[in-house]
Image 1: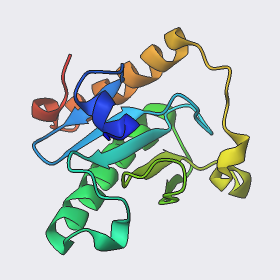
Image 2: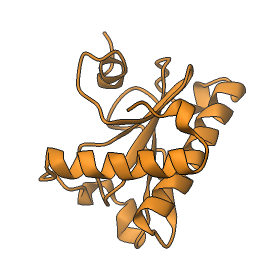
Image 3: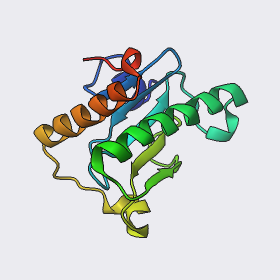
Length: 141
């Protein structure tokens, strides 16, 4: 059975994508710990990050770094957080988010009441920052 992330990647469920390439995607989570919180996900389903081949994991972290720079710029974040939890969905994903404090790393503090309009605005800010840094080819309008 396909993971929820595969369903988002395949367009079976909605997603606010900010990055798409042949191996990975990045989209906003619907339960962010801070505005701009997104997930970097490989297109290929792998349950555990340590089971990924090195080249694929390297690509995933490269994308996380690139979108992380854009999020930092878009939200004027003092620092960026990166977290691999792997407990919620059996499909590798890297959380990338503005890190405002150590509490930001606690995913139980995620907002459950964010509106679609807020998510749309956050996604557009990140897309604009990615375009401004030369990554337009990975940003779909």
